[in-house]
Amino acid sequence: MKRIVLTFFLIIGLFATSGCQKAVKPSSDRHGLSIVTSFYPIYAMTKEVSGDLNDVRMIQSGAGIHSFEPSANDVAAIYDADLFIYHSHTLESWADDLDFNLKKTKATAFEASKSLSLDRVNGLEDVEVTEGIDPATLYDPHTWTDPVLAGEEALSIGKKLSQIDPKNAEYYSKNAKSFKQKADQLAREYQKKFKAVKSKTFVTQHTAFSYLAKRFGLKQLGISGISPDQEPSPRQLTEIQAFIKEYKVKTIFAEDNVSPKIAHTIAKATKAKVKRLSPLESAPHSDKSYLENLRKNMEVLYQSLK
Image 1 (tube, one colour):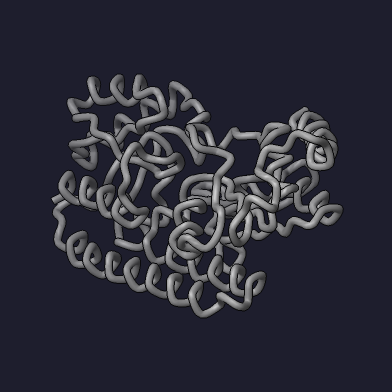
Image 2 (cartoon, helix red, strand yellow):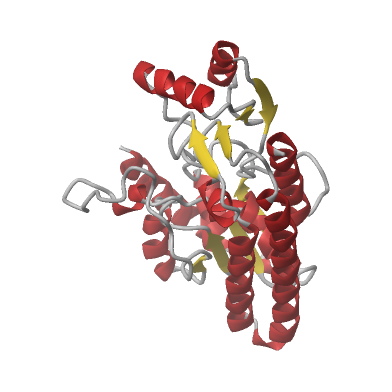
C-alpha cells in the first residue's frame, strides 16, 4: 500500500516540478547547488561539508524517520534539486522509487552510507533472503550514532559534492576531512572514558545505538526493535526486566520524540531511573553542531555507566 501511495506522489511530484508552483525557489534565486537531504544527521553533515556555498535543506525534520514517507511537496522539491542525499535504502526504502524516477529529471540521488558495511540486526544474522523478505529490513541503519562512521559518511558526501561541483572540490574536501578529524578525536576521547566504566551494559527505548556500543565495547538492549514503532511482547518485557536485574542496570534511556510510557513501566518494576538519550534522528532544539550533539549523547551515557 505504501508503494502505491508513494508512486502516486511520484507522479504528482513530476507534474509539480513542471507546473507554476514549486516546493523550492526558482534557479535564478538560488546560490550554488540546490541540495535536499532526507533527515537530520545527513542534513547536518552535508551542511558542514557544503558550508555556505549551497542551499541545503531537509524534508524530514520531525520524529518518525523509520515510518516516514515523503509528501508530494517533498517529492517535488527533490526532483527540482541538483542533488538528493539520503542515508540508506535500509532506512529510506522509499528512495528506491525516487532513484528510478530521478533519471527523468536533472536531479541526482546519492546514498551517503553506500561505502559502509552495515551490520545485521541482532537476532537476524542467520536469516536468509528469500521471496517476501525485504533485504533492507535485515540490516541496522543507525551508523550516525558512531562518530567514526559519521566521519566516513561526511567524507563520502564531500567526494560526491566534489564530483558534482569540481570547481569547489578543494573546499568540500577540506571541510569533510576537518569533520572526520574532529569525529575521530571525539571517538578517541570516549574510547578512554568508556574503557574505564564499571558497567558496560545499557538499556534504550529502541535499538539505535548498536554501532556506538560496538565502537566502545559496550552492550545495548533495546526495549523496542530496530524501530521505535515495534512494540515489545509481554514475554519480551519480562525478559527485559530480568536482563536489567541480572546486569544491575541503573538507568533506562528514553527518547525525546517517543512515548516513554513503557520505559517508565519497566523502570518502576526494576527500580531503575529514566533518562533521555537521543538517537539524533530528528533535529534537536539547539544551535549545536552535529558532533557537539553526539558528544552530549556520549557524555550522558558515560555518566550513567561510570
